[in-house]
Amino acid sequence: MFEQLTQLAQQFGVDSVINNSAVPNEKNEAVIGEASNSVISGLQKIVADGGIDQLAGLFQGDNAKDASNPVVQKLTQQLSGNLGSKLGLDSGAAAGVAAKLIPQILGSLVGKAKDPNDSSFEISDIIGAISGGGENSGIMDAISKYGGQFGLDQNGDGKVDVSDAMDLASKKGLGGALGGLFGK
Image 1 (cartoon, rainbow, N blue to C red):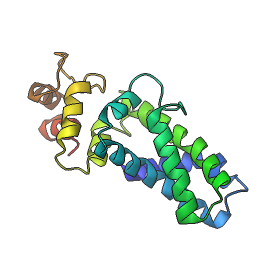
Image 2: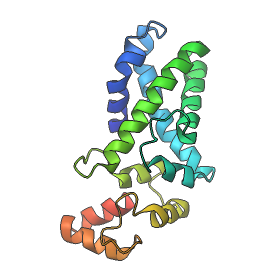
Image 3: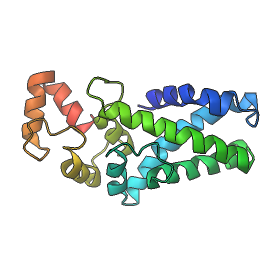
Image 4: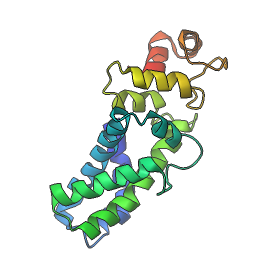
């Protein structure tokens, strides 16, 4: 998933990073890389701090590009701080890059994850990446609670469970179903 995030950061970084005179050209690649890192590490931190409901809220509606969304705010602040402390960008330039780049990346990420015709980002991959790929009961609780909104409730019974894996298995094969539901 990190590679796909880096591609999104590169795509949206043309205006906010590469064509930005406040970002020295020799730092363009590092700024784009830091944007990708900040999205993953920021989402992981939100989950670790008990913000699973905030994360679920990011995938509801069309608020992933909204600068007032708490997740967008946290990731923007994190990236801005990292660009200043790690790469030496002045605070104004760092804040400007982060304020433009994070909503674009998150908006595209969520849009692609929710689009059944776009397999470049699967919600299971996102969950796997932010949970570290391990067993995280908080993430699994969120999957059960919000799975229908994420499109994981394959059989439409209002819960995400083994029967959804079985329904998905008939569509994708057993390995694809388990990977699709549990990000492995």
